[in-house]
Amino acid sequence: MKATLEFVEERFSRFNALCFDGKLPPIPLRISNARTYLGLSRYRKRRGADGSVELYAFSISISGRFDLPESEIEDTVIHEMIHCYIWISGRKDTSAHGRLFRDMMERINREHGRHITISHRSTPQEREQAVDSRPRPHVVALVSFKDGRTGVKVLPCTDRSLVRYRRGVMLSGKVTDIEFYHTDNPWFNRFPCSSALNVIYKKREEILPHLESASPLNVGYFSVKR
Image (cartoon, rainbow, N blue to C red):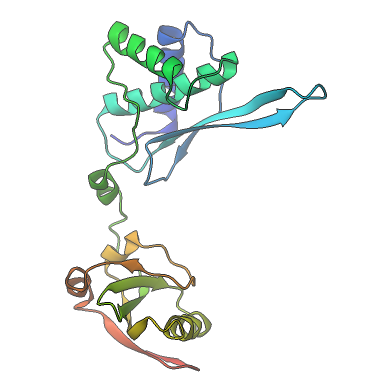
């Protein structure tokens, strides 16, 4: 299943009573579209007139991108609730997942049959599963470097962006060639689209099969022809 706000709100209420004796106040809960984490808790700091530091504006975000077992989403919610419980109680832990966190995690696992872990960042397999698989138009630059590496870059489809990128990358002195393509292959949905002068390194043989049906673009210094 994929996490929904209704599910997370219901589980927060249930586990607050079951695992935290109802001591957690209402906390804003959100469903995110994150691919790099399953859950994330936050707070803000402010300094009082006496110099003391107060934590406030607590929140919990749960990613709704991943199709996961219900129990894993529940464990993620409890993981973030432990963080908030420690912050709100004003106790100092030895680290982000220090002694206090581990003691609470182990107690909840033992008493309630949970399987909460220290880290619940998404795995490479989960991130791959979360990639948008719908066809979308992309302009892709295939960049060949003098050291033999190959990079891929998804760019905004504007003359200015493409010409600026071509000029900037070639002036680096590290590049032998740039090939531009127009494609709607969903494989490229995984790459961020920007005009930044960078690439994501991939093996050429991994990239080329996804460009088999792509249309080459002629990107000169002053115009783009498709």
